[in-house]
Image (cartoon, rainbow over all chains, first blue to last red; front, side, top):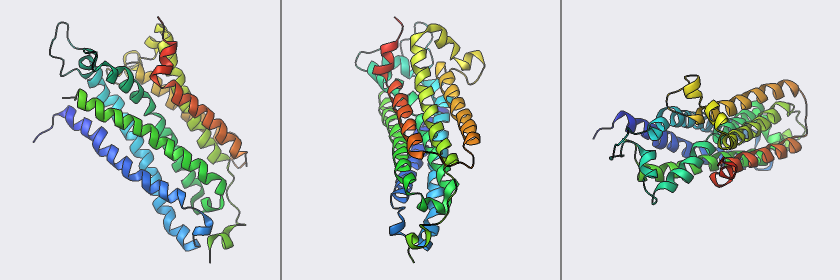
Length: 177
Length: 122
């Protein structure tokens, strides 16, 4: 029961950070969704704002950590070029995927989309977290902000979801050892 | 006492800084999509975007390094500039949000392989 360095970072990138992100999203979404003045007492607003703030910032920070570890630690192992003439490509996931017409779309479509779209998520999540931080309990008096924040928060989750889904499939097709 | 009874008339902070954060996210996403597409259009741009090789920022990341560094740079820079411009101001948040959504739509579209590959150099 041991992990190589590469497997360890792949787990941190995809499983640990991804799980925290998934857990933070519904907390933030529910908090924003129910942030309607007619539903809440003053005490209720004050009680839930710290939770919304923490959930929003956790999602933003985790999104940044996920794309940074993915791009600068795991991705170079994925795209490494194998030595000339090597036939066993298991340590070179991109080359392994491209070596067969049955798997090449995992790279040409899945990885090409994932590696780019993922970076939209932290920018959106940070914007939402900043607005929650900026207004604090006053956010309940800004009903025109609630729907835009919900949309941006959901788009942040969608971008990360696309990346996470393809990451899981690609790891299944060509794991990083 | 319900929040709306007590807080409806409460004065809130101006929305300029919030609008700046939202629009900056749209700008960053659009710039990302733009460089993803430009990378396909020209080998010169493709080579320029390899910041890992050209500037030693990371090892083996390839052109993705340049695309995301420039996108995040545009995001942060536009956020700073807009925050300074809109500091203490009330802006048309709906209009800003719609503009951010349009930029986001371009950002998402231009990072989608079947779309950015339309612009690929032969």
